[in-house]
Image (cartoon, rainbow, N blue to C red; front, side, top):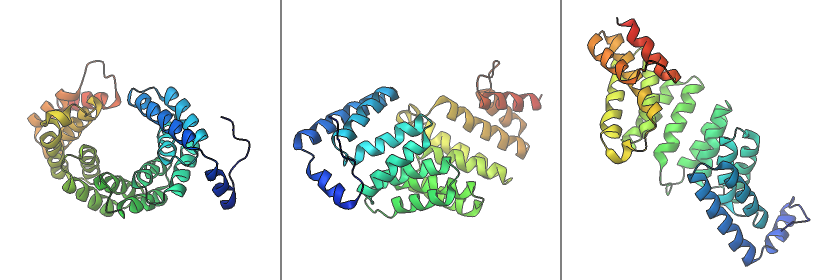
Length: 259
């Protein structure tokens, strides 16, 4: 259905909202559900098509704007993603998931202060189901802007809140290595193995590249501490002869340094 009037001012928005029929809202929800299924199967173009159709039928469908932000971000179309996140925030200012997702986008854009503000808004909602994600993201944003103290504080809070927050261990290990605290880096890499890899359900969701990245941090930490054998074992677990990824290449180099 083609709409002939753009909704610009508050009065126009109210008028447009009044013209959305129950049939349009129901159709938009169906297209949104189809798009979510496409996203889960990695078909971003199909998801985009249905999400655009959903917001055309119902411009007030907040979930569709949030999903459009995710899809556009994944496609590298950051400004389009930001436009839809902002629309979702306008429609539902306290929608914590949108605030977190928008914060991730702003972090990727290097707008660290804006990202931190979005994460703080997400955390202000006591009903937010996964606050550890927003706090972990906020910790990484603080670190990226040059505040390692606040970064570590929030990341430590995040993994304390949810010991199975696997990404948090990666950020913590990376930061500790860069701050020359190898013992802490090793500790976080070992906690990742305990809480993430030794739990079959969680391990099934951990990307192989990330698991190898954690082995690299473990190997580098042991190497700095002078534990050559433990370092060699960690590097060997993530190195490959063809070094298909950057982390595998780093593991191979680490292994060669020990020979």
